[in-house]
Image: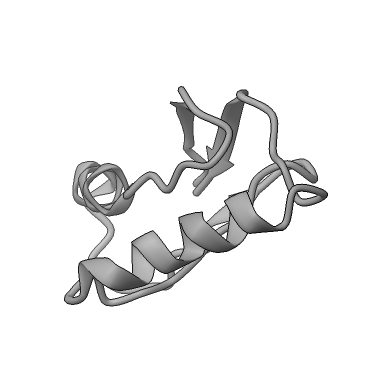
Length: 82
């Protein structure tokens, strides 16, 4: 089974939590046992795994992106494969 989640960004530096979309996709699949593989196609997007218990981690990542001007990502629409 493969599903595609499409995410649109609105800023150059942006983190988007896709946990709810992944959970919904898994629940709708009705598969009870297995593994979920999340893959982002392309060089301008990435997957970051974090616990989200500390908001400062997200702020630190965004600050790092802004400080290092050579590491700017374009606004884009990204497909995430599950």
